[in-house]
View (cartoon, rainbow, N blue to C red):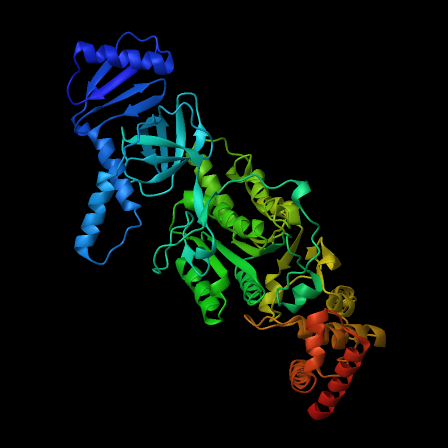
Length: 577
């Protein structure tokens, strides 16, 4: 026998009761002979009928709520108050209430952003639900008699007995051109005081990554403008390159430099701030705005003061926004800053949902947490859109421990890592990239021919320098070859120093790498290397602009261009001395 509940303002008579039972038999095949009647004056009028997990809401309260939603989402805007009032009257006259059954649940408990809900037997994992105060929630725990819902808004107004409504869809965020230049929260709502966002559509935050058949090999460079990265740890469009290091070692600076370098290249940049201070996010926004790069960027902010649920879905929301552009043939660069805090937010939610903790109290599926996110970055074939999404996830280590749980997880998922060493950072080597621990599994496939040709021996020379530096730090008597290797390595390191927010074009990188790897700087005093290279680039730009332009257009360094660079360097050396 099915349990049927009738909520109404006044008890029905016998005839009305029989008509309701007949309706239920026709709709659900229910064999109920009696209705459980509950008097509820808050309905104002009409009734609600619940059976087999569905609720038919014919109450006045429901009609008023539907009308309110219709008026709120109406696009009719008039400056004249009388015209506006008449337009609203017309909306009300044409309003047609929905009579479709809905699935409603009731709140049993609210605690720390987790809501236990009964009465939603058909709810699915990841589904969006709506509370009667208008806030959203996401189903993250399925139990025998209840579901665990993560609240995506404020808990004020939600208490025991509050209604929860299934939507039948997953949590979605707005996507499209209207988001460019904006700062939004994890649900795509604007937080930059620039008015509402006009999206081109909506996409679910969670989506299965495309299969192998949809992907192209990574072969097109994504220039970061950072000489040390583009020369030794190249990044291709569609790649996933991890940036890892202790706090305050320049991880975010590398990501922001890469975003600045995409100005005027057509690459869309998305910066996802997870658990960052609001002041840090505002600083990134101001940096992009001052340098004219905010127009091609989107900032998704789930700050440290936001709930763990918003920090949890923020990177997936950013990925959904990027996938829209990728499937429309655009190239996207997305930065996740940082996934360490993302894992902590998921651990918090899992513990509140009473899931079994594992290593370091993280749940057992924490690896899947990041793998399903980073797998969404790829380069699509032309049949599937032809765009790409390049991911730069950031992980913060403790005391340089790259073998910790979360760092090793993400290292195994990505296509390489850029490791920033605090010792190098505090010694003045910035960016503080450790050449030995940094690697790109794409390699030369994601480099222009000019950079590949001129940077061929750079990594080997630096590795040899590091090795000799360790063994000779306590030795005062060195042979000539060893001293030359050390001097060459020191000049290479000096050349790789680069100011923050000053990305280099490919032509400048190729010219500097050529003079460095050819040993043309070995006779220059170490303290004059920076001044000499600045003078060289100034001379090339003023007197040989066509050489630099040719490198930019063709991506190659011809023999004639190399001779021009060499002769310009000799002139600069004479002037410097």
